[in-house]
Length: 116
Image (cartoon, rainbow, N blue to C red; front, side, top):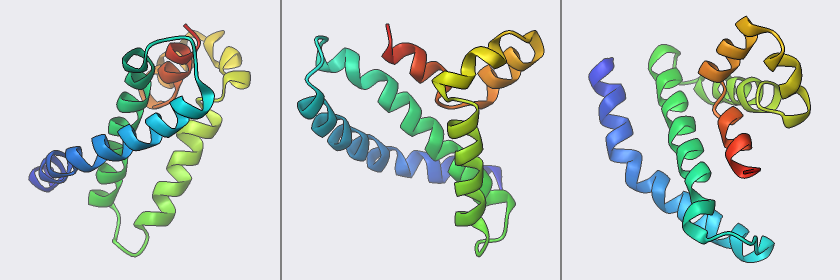
């Protein structure tokens, strides 16, 4: 299982980088922020790579017919609930939750990097 997981991530790195580059380029051109493109793309690359890792990790531990549903639920919980900027302050007040959210959420630090 571990070798399958590592092989899928390494092979898919090119795909993740290309899709992230295209999405970020379009978003950058529409939004036109006052920072350089290379500084803007860093949180997107890290978030995409981590999300792909979570997806492949889940695909190795659940049956294939349940994979897409479980990945969508986990993504909603990890990004939507734990990485939401409006609820993030509530989690950061409790030291145990701060550590848990920082370790689990793939968008927690990306939100912070986006608002630098």
